[in-house]
Image 1 (cartoon, rainbow over the protein chains, first blue to last red):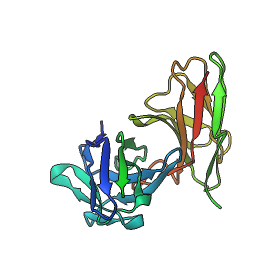
Image 2 (cartoon, chains in turn purple, orange):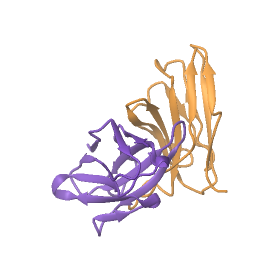
Image 3 (cartoon, chains in turn purple, blue):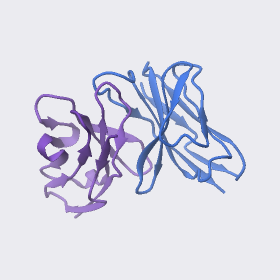
Image 4 (cartoon, rainbow over the protein chains, first blue to last red):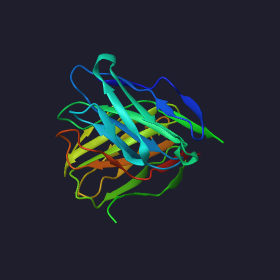
Length: 113
Length: 115
């Protein structure tokens, strides 16, 4: 069965600093990988997704993620964080050909002035 | 605007009562899902449906029931058998269940509190 681990429950970053949120997955074949963002009390919004091809994926709001098969990782990055990026971020994995996703437990991003 | 509408946003239920959460989508998606979210637990799949009049249990289906009589509607009933129903519930949909990693789109969620 597939699984997702987000090792950091909370991360605090200064506004303007760079950000990296970690995601490790467990899956036997090449997975489909997603990053979603959730503001408090709201639904989830898709930031980016990886299916195949280029391992560096660009998303909305200036986010990018890199798929590293050797490390079973799909870390999310942003070069300069804005206060509006404060939210909870979820990594998710789905098997090929079947789109029910398994979600990580999330990482809460706090942005300090 | 196209999207997924969940109602009500906030709902209080007395112990022993059933309650139904509404989910409507106008995206013309075949597949629909219900997730439960608890603090620090991520999202857990309750039920999903890939087509009208068909649905399957997810990871935590006990104490819940669903129906899919129309393509655009996928209501979730939280029954009195659900031992710990207080949670945030998210409805979602995608073009189809199978395929190359179809993106799942989410509604704004419904808060259920048992009092």
